[in-house]
Image 1 (cartoon, rainbow, N blue to C red):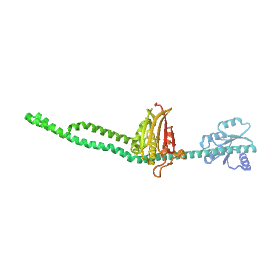
Image 2: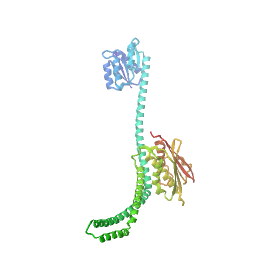
Image 3: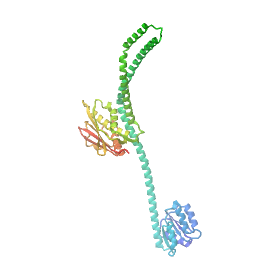
Image 4: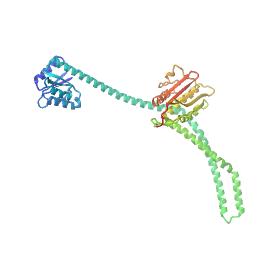
Amino acid sequence: MNILIVDDTKFNLKYAKNILIENKIDCNIILANSGKEALAILDSEEIDIVILDIVMPEIDGIEVLKNIRKNTKYFNIPVIMFTSLTDKQALKKSFEHGATDFINKPIEPIEFISRIKAAIRIKKYEMHLTQTLNTIKNQNEELLALNKKLQETQYYLIQKEKLVAIGQLAAGVAHEINNPIGYVSSNTETLSKYIHKIKTAIDKYKELLHCLNDTNIQSEEIQNKIQELYALRNNLHLDFIMSDIDSLINDSFKGIEKITKIVQSLRNFARHDLETDFNYYNLNDLVEETLLLIKNEARYIVHIEKKLNDLPLIFCNRTQIGQVLLNIMMNAVQAIKSQKREEEGLMEISTFVSENYIVCEISDDGPGIDKNIIDKIFNPFFTTKEVGTGTGLGLSISYDIVVNKHAGELLVNSELGQGTTFTIKLPIKAIS
Protein backbone atom coordinates (compact mmCIF):
# COMPACT_ATOMS: atom_id res chain seq x y z
CA MET A 1 0.00 0.00 0.00
CA ASN A 2 1.64 3.29 -1.17
CA ILE A 3 0.47 6.46 0.59
CA LEU A 4 1.46 9.84 -0.85
CA ILE A 5 1.42 12.79 1.60
CA VAL A 6 1.49 16.22 -0.04
CA ASP A 7 2.08 19.37 2.01
CA ASP A 8 4.28 22.43 1.61
CA THR A 9 5.08 22.40 5.35
CA LYS A 10 7.83 19.97 6.32
CA PHE A 11 6.54 19.77 9.88
CA ASN A 12 3.16 18.50 8.71
CA LEU A 13 4.83 15.96 6.41
CA LYS A 14 7.06 14.64 9.18
CA TYR A 15 4.28 14.65 11.76
CA ALA A 16 1.86 12.74 9.49
CA LYS A 17 4.58 10.23 8.64
CA ASN A 18 5.41 9.64 12.31
CA ILE A 19 1.75 9.06 13.19
CA LEU A 20 1.52 6.38 10.49
CA ILE A 21 4.71 4.70 11.70
CA GLU A 22 3.75 4.87 15.39
CA ASN A 23 0.37 3.29 14.65
CA LYS A 24 2.10 0.57 12.63
CA ILE A 25 0.16 1.23 9.46
CA ASP A 26 1.47 -1.28 6.93
CA CYS A 27 2.31 1.03 4.07
CA ASN A 28 5.05 2.67 2.06
CA ILE A 29 5.06 6.41 2.81
CA ILE A 30 5.99 8.84 0.03
CA LEU A 31 6.35 12.57 0.75
CA ALA A 32 5.94 15.57 -1.58
CA ASN A 33 6.23 19.23 -0.54
CA SER A 34 4.53 20.74 -3.61
CA GLY A 35 1.71 20.08 -6.04
CA LYS A 36 4.17 19.86 -8.95
CA GLU A 37 6.25 17.22 -7.18
CA ALA A 38 3.08 15.31 -6.27
CA LEU A 39 1.96 15.15 -9.92
CA ALA A 40 5.42 13.93 -10.99
CA ILE A 41 5.28 11.17 -8.38
CA LEU A 42 1.79 10.16 -9.51
CA ASP A 43 3.07 9.82 -13.08
CA SER A 44 5.98 7.59 -12.04
CA GLU A 45 4.71 5.64 -9.04
CA GLU A 46 1.78 3.36 -8.21
CA ILE A 47 -0.04 5.36 -5.54
CA ASP A 48 -2.96 3.89 -3.56
CA ILE A 49 -3.96 6.80 -1.27
CA VAL A 50 -3.24 10.54 -1.46
CA ILE A 51 -3.27 12.92 1.53
CA LEU A 52 -3.38 16.34 -0.07
CA ASP A 53 -3.01 19.83 1.40
CA ILE A 54 -5.40 22.35 -0.11
CA VAL A 55 -3.34 25.52 0.28
CA MET A 56 0.02 25.29 -1.51
CA PRO A 57 2.04 27.70 -3.67
CA GLU A 58 2.13 27.44 -7.51
CA ILE A 59 -0.26 24.50 -7.83
CA ASP A 60 -2.75 24.23 -5.01
CA GLY A 61 -4.36 21.05 -3.78
CA ILE A 62 -7.60 21.52 -5.72
CA GLU A 63 -5.70 21.76 -9.04
CA VAL A 64 -3.74 18.64 -8.13
CA LEU A 65 -7.05 16.93 -7.32
CA LYS A 66 -8.47 17.93 -10.72
CA ASN A 67 -5.45 16.43 -12.47
CA ILE A 68 -5.78 13.23 -10.46
CA ARG A 69 -9.42 12.81 -11.47
CA LYS A 70 -8.62 13.43 -15.14
CA ASN A 71 -6.23 10.49 -15.14
CA THR A 72 -8.11 7.21 -15.59
CA LYS A 73 -5.29 5.44 -13.76
CA TYR A 74 -6.19 7.30 -10.54
CA PHE A 75 -9.85 8.04 -11.20
CA ASN A 76 -11.04 6.10 -8.12
CA ILE A 77 -8.04 6.63 -5.84
CA PRO A 78 -8.97 7.85 -2.31
CA VAL A 79 -7.89 11.49 -1.90
CA ILE A 80 -8.03 12.95 1.63
CA MET A 81 -7.75 16.72 1.86
CA PHE A 82 -5.84 18.63 4.55
CA THR A 83 -7.93 21.59 5.61
CA SER A 84 -8.81 23.85 8.49
CA LEU A 85 -12.18 24.28 10.14
CA THR A 86 -12.45 27.80 8.71
CA ASP A 87 -11.75 26.76 5.09
CA LYS A 88 -15.30 25.64 4.24
CA GLN A 89 -15.44 26.92 0.65
CA ALA A 90 -12.19 25.18 -0.29
CA LEU A 91 -13.53 22.00 1.30
CA LYS A 92 -16.76 22.27 -0.70
CA LYS A 93 -14.77 22.66 -3.94
CA SER A 94 -12.64 19.69 -3.00
CA PHE A 95 -15.66 17.39 -2.70
CA GLU A 96 -17.12 18.79 -5.92
CA HIS A 97 -13.94 17.75 -7.72
CA GLY A 98 -13.83 14.25 -6.23
CA ALA A 99 -12.22 14.37 -2.78
CA THR A 100 -12.95 11.28 -0.69
CA ASP A 101 -12.54 12.69 2.83
CA PHE A 102 -10.83 15.46 4.80
CA ILE A 103 -8.54 15.84 7.82
CA ASN A 104 -8.57 18.94 9.97
CA LYS A 105 -5.51 20.97 10.68
CA PRO A 106 -3.76 21.03 13.01
CA ILE A 107 -3.47 17.26 12.81
CA GLU A 108 -5.12 15.39 15.66
CA PRO A 109 -3.61 11.83 15.75
CA ILE A 110 -6.81 9.90 16.56
CA GLU A 111 -8.81 11.60 13.84
CA PHE A 112 -5.93 11.34 11.38
CA ILE A 113 -5.31 7.64 11.89
CA SER A 114 -9.07 6.83 11.89
CA ARG A 115 -9.58 8.51 8.54
CA ILE A 116 -6.46 6.90 7.08
CA LYS A 117 -7.64 3.45 8.21
CA ALA A 118 -11.03 4.14 6.63
CA ALA A 119 -9.32 5.12 3.38
CA ILE A 120 -7.18 1.98 3.51
CA ARG A 121 -10.33 -0.14 3.99
CA ILE A 122 -11.94 1.58 1.00
CA LYS A 123 -8.83 1.02 -1.11
CA LYS A 124 -8.56 -2.63 -0.11
CA TYR A 125 -12.24 -3.10 -0.89
CA GLU A 126 -11.74 -1.44 -4.26
CA MET A 127 -8.68 -3.62 -4.95
CA HIS A 128 -10.63 -6.71 -3.93
CA LEU A 129 -13.56 -5.63 -6.10
CA THR A 130 -11.25 -4.99 -9.06
CA GLN A 131 -9.60 -8.36 -8.56
CA THR A 132 -13.00 -10.02 -8.34
CA LEU A 133 -14.18 -8.27 -11.50
CA ASN A 134 -11.01 -9.31 -13.32
CA THR A 135 -11.49 -12.87 -12.10
CA ILE A 136 -15.11 -12.81 -13.29
CA LYS A 137 -14.02 -11.31 -16.60
CA ASN A 138 -11.36 -14.02 -17.04
CA GLN A 139 -13.83 -16.72 -16.04
CA ASN A 140 -16.40 -15.28 -18.42
CA GLU A 141 -13.86 -15.32 -21.26
CA GLU A 142 -12.97 -18.91 -20.37
CA LEU A 143 -16.65 -19.83 -20.28
CA LEU A 144 -17.23 -18.17 -23.65
CA ALA A 145 -14.27 -20.06 -25.10
CA LEU A 146 -15.51 -23.28 -23.50
CA ASN A 147 -19.03 -22.67 -24.76
CA LYS A 148 -17.68 -22.08 -28.27
CA LYS A 149 -15.67 -25.29 -28.00
CA LEU A 150 -18.75 -27.16 -26.74
CA GLN A 151 -20.82 -25.79 -29.63
CA GLU A 152 -18.15 -26.91 -32.08
CA THR A 153 -18.00 -30.31 -30.39
CA GLN A 154 -21.78 -30.59 -30.46
CA TYR A 155 -21.76 -29.63 -34.15
CA TYR A 156 -19.23 -32.35 -34.97
CA LEU A 157 -21.10 -34.90 -32.84
CA ILE A 158 -24.29 -34.09 -34.75
CA GLN A 159 -22.45 -34.48 -38.05
CA LYS A 160 -20.99 -37.77 -36.81
CA GLU A 161 -24.45 -38.99 -35.85
CA LYS A 162 -25.66 -38.03 -39.33
CA LEU A 163 -22.82 -39.96 -40.93
CA VAL A 164 -23.63 -43.00 -38.78
CA ALA A 165 -27.28 -42.79 -39.88
CA ILE A 166 -26.28 -42.32 -43.51
CA GLY A 167 -23.96 -45.32 -43.21
CA GLN A 168 -26.81 -47.43 -41.84
CA LEU A 169 -29.12 -46.24 -44.62
CA ALA A 170 -26.60 -46.40 -47.46
CA ALA A 171 -27.31 -49.96 -48.57
CA GLY A 172 -31.06 -49.45 -48.36
CA VAL A 173 -30.98 -46.14 -50.18
CA ALA A 174 -28.76 -47.67 -52.85
CA HIS A 175 -31.29 -50.49 -53.25
CA GLU A 176 -34.17 -48.02 -53.48
CA ILE A 177 -32.29 -46.09 -56.16
CA ASN A 178 -31.18 -49.24 -58.02
CA ASN A 179 -34.76 -50.36 -58.63
CA PRO A 180 -35.88 -47.28 -60.58
CA ILE A 181 -32.46 -47.00 -62.22
CA GLY A 182 -32.91 -50.60 -63.35
CA TYR A 183 -36.18 -50.05 -65.15
CA VAL A 184 -35.15 -46.61 -66.45
CA SER A 185 -32.06 -48.28 -67.92
CA SER A 186 -34.17 -51.13 -69.36
CA ASN A 187 -36.70 -48.65 -70.78
CA THR A 188 -33.91 -46.60 -72.32
CA GLU A 189 -32.47 -49.70 -73.97
CA THR A 190 -35.90 -50.63 -75.34
CA LEU A 191 -36.49 -47.06 -76.55
CA SER A 192 -33.13 -47.19 -78.31
CA LYS A 193 -34.25 -50.32 -80.20
CA TYR A 194 -37.61 -48.73 -80.97
CA ILE A 195 -35.93 -45.60 -82.34
CA HIS A 196 -33.69 -47.73 -84.58
CA LYS A 197 -36.79 -49.46 -86.04
CA ILE A 198 -38.62 -46.15 -86.43
CA LYS A 199 -35.63 -44.68 -88.26
CA THR A 200 -35.65 -47.70 -90.60
CA ALA A 201 -39.34 -47.07 -91.33
CA ILE A 202 -38.72 -43.35 -91.86
CA ASP A 203 -36.02 -44.18 -94.43
CA LYS A 204 -38.57 -46.29 -96.33
CA TYR A 205 -41.12 -43.47 -96.18
CA LYS A 206 -38.48 -41.13 -97.60
CA GLU A 207 -37.97 -43.55 -100.51
CA LEU A 208 -41.75 -43.53 -101.12
CA LEU A 209 -41.83 -39.71 -101.07
CA HIS A 210 -38.97 -39.64 -103.58
CA CYS A 211 -40.92 -41.96 -105.88
CA LEU A 212 -44.04 -39.84 -105.59
CA ASN A 213 -42.09 -36.74 -106.59
CA ASP A 214 -40.39 -38.44 -109.56
CA THR A 215 -42.65 -38.19 -112.66
CA ASN A 216 -40.68 -40.95 -114.42
CA ILE A 217 -41.61 -43.56 -111.79
CA GLN A 218 -44.43 -45.88 -112.79
CA SER A 219 -47.45 -46.32 -110.53
CA GLU A 220 -46.68 -50.03 -110.29
CA GLU A 221 -43.33 -49.23 -108.66
CA ILE A 222 -45.06 -46.87 -106.25
CA GLN A 223 -47.52 -49.60 -105.29
CA ASN A 224 -44.59 -51.93 -104.61
CA LYS A 225 -43.05 -49.35 -102.27
CA ILE A 226 -46.33 -49.01 -100.42
CA GLN A 227 -46.59 -52.78 -100.02
CA GLU A 228 -43.02 -52.86 -98.71
CA LEU A 229 -43.97 -50.24 -96.09
CA TYR A 230 -46.98 -52.31 -94.94
CA ALA A 231 -44.78 -55.39 -94.65
CA LEU A 232 -42.10 -53.41 -92.81
CA ARG A 233 -44.68 -52.01 -90.40
CA ASN A 234 -45.81 -55.53 -89.54
CA ASN A 235 -42.29 -56.93 -89.30
CA LEU A 236 -41.08 -54.11 -87.06
CA HIS A 237 -44.29 -54.12 -84.97
CA LEU A 238 -44.56 -50.37 -85.42
CA ASP A 239 -48.15 -50.20 -84.15
CA PHE A 240 -47.12 -51.83 -80.86
CA ILE A 241 -44.01 -49.63 -80.66
CA MET A 242 -46.03 -46.46 -81.09
CA SER A 243 -48.49 -47.51 -78.40
CA ASP A 244 -45.68 -48.63 -76.02
CA ILE A 245 -43.48 -45.54 -76.30
CA ASP A 246 -45.68 -43.33 -74.12
CA SER A 247 -45.79 -45.98 -71.42
CA LEU A 248 -42.00 -46.41 -71.46
CA ILE A 249 -41.42 -42.65 -71.24
CA ASN A 250 -43.96 -42.21 -68.43
CA ASP A 251 -42.45 -45.09 -66.44
CA SER A 252 -38.97 -43.63 -66.95
CA PHE A 253 -40.09 -40.22 -65.74
CA LYS A 254 -41.63 -41.83 -62.64
CA GLY A 255 -38.38 -43.68 -61.97
CA ILE A 256 -36.34 -40.51 -62.35
CA GLU A 257 -38.78 -38.65 -60.08
CA LYS A 258 -38.44 -41.39 -57.44
CA ILE A 259 -34.63 -41.22 -57.63
CA THR A 260 -34.78 -37.43 -57.38
CA LYS A 261 -36.97 -37.60 -54.27
CA ILE A 262 -34.67 -40.12 -52.57
CA VAL A 263 -31.54 -38.17 -53.41
CA GLN A 264 -33.16 -34.87 -52.35
CA SER A 265 -34.30 -36.40 -49.04
CA LEU A 266 -30.82 -37.73 -48.36
CA ARG A 267 -29.31 -34.40 -49.39
CA ASN A 268 -31.64 -32.47 -47.07
CA PHE A 269 -30.75 -34.78 -44.21
CA ALA A 270 -26.99 -34.70 -44.81
CA ARG A 271 -26.53 -30.99 -45.48
CA HIS A 272 -24.80 -29.04 -42.72
CA ASP A 273 -25.10 -25.57 -44.25
CA LEU A 274 -28.82 -25.46 -43.37
CA GLU A 275 -28.35 -25.92 -39.61
CA THR A 276 -29.53 -22.36 -38.91
CA ASP A 277 -32.10 -22.13 -41.71
CA PHE A 278 -35.57 -21.83 -40.15
CA ASN A 279 -38.62 -21.57 -42.38
CA TYR A 280 -42.24 -22.71 -42.66
CA TYR A 281 -42.68 -26.38 -43.58
CA ASN A 282 -45.39 -29.03 -43.52
CA LEU A 283 -44.44 -31.70 -40.98
CA ASN A 284 -46.22 -34.36 -43.06
CA ASP A 285 -43.77 -33.69 -45.92
CA LEU A 286 -40.85 -34.25 -43.57
CA VAL A 287 -42.42 -37.51 -42.34
CA GLU A 288 -42.86 -38.73 -45.93
CA GLU A 289 -39.27 -37.79 -46.78
CA THR A 290 -37.98 -39.72 -43.78
CA LEU A 291 -40.09 -42.77 -44.60
CA LEU A 292 -38.60 -42.73 -48.07
CA LEU A 293 -35.12 -42.98 -46.54
CA ILE A 294 -35.92 -45.86 -44.18
CA LYS A 295 -38.18 -47.77 -46.61
CA ASN A 296 -35.65 -50.44 -47.47
CA GLU A 297 -34.39 -50.69 -43.87
CA ALA A 298 -37.95 -51.40 -42.71
CA ARG A 299 -38.85 -53.79 -45.55
CA TYR A 300 -39.87 -57.26 -44.30
CA ILE A 301 -39.26 -56.11 -40.69
CA VAL A 302 -41.84 -53.43 -39.98
CA HIS A 303 -45.25 -52.71 -41.41
CA ILE A 304 -45.78 -48.96 -41.39
CA GLU A 305 -49.18 -47.41 -40.90
CA LYS A 306 -49.67 -43.66 -41.38
CA LYS A 307 -52.39 -41.37 -40.16
CA LEU A 308 -51.30 -37.93 -41.28
CA ASN A 309 -53.94 -35.27 -40.70
CA ASP A 310 -54.03 -31.85 -42.33
CA LEU A 311 -51.56 -29.56 -40.57
CA PRO A 312 -50.73 -25.87 -40.62
CA LEU A 313 -47.20 -24.99 -41.67
CA ILE A 314 -44.69 -25.04 -38.84
CA PHE A 315 -41.71 -22.73 -38.36
CA CYS A 316 -38.76 -25.07 -37.95
CA ASN A 317 -35.39 -26.17 -39.23
CA ARG A 318 -36.08 -28.80 -41.89
CA THR A 319 -32.74 -30.57 -41.51
CA GLN A 320 -32.93 -30.79 -37.72
CA ILE A 321 -36.53 -32.02 -37.51
CA GLY A 322 -35.77 -34.51 -40.29
CA GLN A 323 -32.93 -35.85 -38.16
CA VAL A 324 -35.23 -36.21 -35.14
CA LEU A 325 -37.80 -38.16 -37.19
CA LEU A 326 -35.08 -40.37 -38.69
CA ASN A 327 -33.47 -41.10 -35.31
CA ILE A 328 -36.77 -42.15 -33.71
CA MET A 329 -38.01 -44.18 -36.72
CA MET A 330 -34.68 -45.97 -37.09
CA ASN A 331 -34.69 -46.77 -33.37
CA ALA A 332 -38.16 -48.31 -33.75
CA VAL A 333 -37.08 -50.42 -36.75
CA GLN A 334 -33.90 -51.58 -35.00
CA ALA A 335 -35.78 -52.37 -31.78
CA ILE A 336 -38.23 -54.61 -33.65
CA LYS A 337 -35.40 -56.14 -35.69
CA SER A 338 -33.56 -57.05 -32.47
CA GLN A 339 -36.45 -59.36 -31.50
CA LYS A 340 -35.79 -61.56 -34.56
CA ARG A 341 -39.48 -62.35 -34.79
CA GLU A 342 -40.91 -64.25 -37.75
CA GLU A 343 -43.78 -61.87 -38.46
CA GLU A 344 -43.49 -58.17 -39.25
CA GLY A 345 -43.62 -55.64 -36.45
CA LEU A 346 -45.80 -52.54 -36.54
CA MET A 347 -44.86 -48.88 -36.54
CA GLU A 348 -47.65 -46.33 -36.45
CA ILE A 349 -47.07 -42.68 -37.32
CA SER A 350 -49.73 -40.06 -36.72
CA THR A 351 -49.75 -36.29 -36.92
CA PHE A 352 -52.38 -33.91 -35.59
CA VAL A 353 -52.93 -30.53 -33.93
CA SER A 354 -53.33 -30.34 -30.16
CA GLU A 355 -53.94 -26.91 -28.63
CA ASN A 356 -50.98 -24.75 -29.70
CA TYR A 357 -48.81 -27.65 -30.84
CA ILE A 358 -48.35 -29.79 -33.90
CA VAL A 359 -47.87 -33.33 -32.65
CA CYS A 360 -46.20 -36.33 -34.25
CA GLU A 361 -46.54 -39.68 -32.48
CA ILE A 362 -44.31 -42.58 -33.53
CA SER A 363 -45.31 -45.88 -31.93
CA ASP A 364 -43.86 -49.36 -32.30
CA ASP A 365 -44.75 -52.77 -30.89
CA GLY A 366 -41.12 -53.60 -30.16
CA PRO A 367 -39.53 -54.79 -26.90
CA GLY A 368 -40.21 -51.55 -24.99
CA ILE A 369 -37.91 -49.81 -22.52
CA ASP A 370 -37.25 -50.87 -18.94
CA LYS A 371 -38.67 -48.33 -16.48
CA ASN A 372 -35.30 -48.33 -14.65
CA ILE A 373 -33.53 -46.80 -17.65
CA ILE A 374 -36.26 -44.81 -19.38
CA ASP A 375 -35.13 -41.61 -17.58
CA LYS A 376 -31.63 -42.05 -19.04
CA ILE A 377 -32.43 -42.50 -22.71
CA PHE A 378 -31.98 -38.79 -23.52
CA ASN A 379 -28.57 -38.68 -21.82
CA PRO A 380 -25.60 -38.33 -24.21
CA PHE A 381 -23.83 -41.62 -25.03
CA PHE A 382 -26.44 -43.74 -23.25
CA THR A 383 -27.42 -46.72 -25.39
CA THR A 384 -28.89 -50.17 -24.96
CA LYS A 385 -27.57 -51.34 -28.31
CA GLU A 386 -24.65 -53.67 -28.71
CA VAL A 387 -21.16 -52.14 -28.83
CA GLY A 388 -20.45 -50.78 -32.29
CA THR A 389 -24.10 -50.54 -33.35
CA GLY A 390 -24.98 -47.17 -31.82
CA THR A 391 -23.36 -43.94 -30.69
CA GLY A 392 -25.78 -43.16 -27.88
CA LEU A 393 -26.22 -39.66 -29.30
CA GLY A 394 -29.36 -40.00 -31.43
CA LEU A 395 -31.95 -39.35 -28.73
CA SER A 396 -29.89 -36.75 -26.84
CA ILE A 397 -29.42 -34.80 -30.09
CA SER A 398 -33.13 -35.20 -30.85
CA TYR A 399 -34.03 -33.87 -27.38
CA ASP A 400 -31.74 -30.87 -27.83
CA ILE A 401 -33.22 -30.10 -31.25
CA VAL A 402 -36.87 -30.35 -30.15
CA VAL A 403 -36.65 -28.80 -26.67
CA ASN A 404 -33.79 -26.29 -26.88
CA LYS A 405 -33.78 -25.30 -30.54
CA HIS A 406 -37.54 -25.42 -31.23
CA ALA A 407 -39.06 -24.75 -27.76
CA GLY A 408 -41.06 -27.97 -28.05
CA GLU A 409 -41.41 -31.20 -26.10
CA LEU A 410 -40.07 -34.70 -26.69
CA LEU A 411 -41.88 -37.30 -24.59
CA VAL A 412 -41.59 -41.05 -24.30
CA ASN A 413 -44.03 -43.64 -23.01
CA SER A 414 -43.05 -47.29 -22.94
CA GLU A 415 -43.99 -50.60 -21.44
CA LEU A 416 -41.57 -53.50 -21.35
CA GLY A 417 -42.68 -56.18 -23.80
CA GLN A 418 -45.44 -53.98 -25.23
CA GLY A 419 -43.74 -51.25 -27.24
CA THR A 420 -42.80 -47.58 -27.16
CA THR A 421 -44.35 -44.29 -28.21
CA PHE A 422 -42.34 -41.13 -28.82
CA THR A 423 -44.30 -37.88 -28.95
CA ILE A 424 -42.85 -34.83 -30.69
CA LYS A 425 -44.64 -31.57 -29.89
CA LEU A 426 -43.68 -28.45 -31.82
CA PRO A 427 -45.24 -25.04 -31.10
CA ILE A 428 -47.37 -23.46 -33.80
CA LYS A 429 -46.06 -20.06 -34.83
CA ALA A 430 -48.30 -17.87 -36.93
CA ILE A 431 -46.98 -16.86 -40.34
CA SER A 432 -46.14 -13.17 -40.13
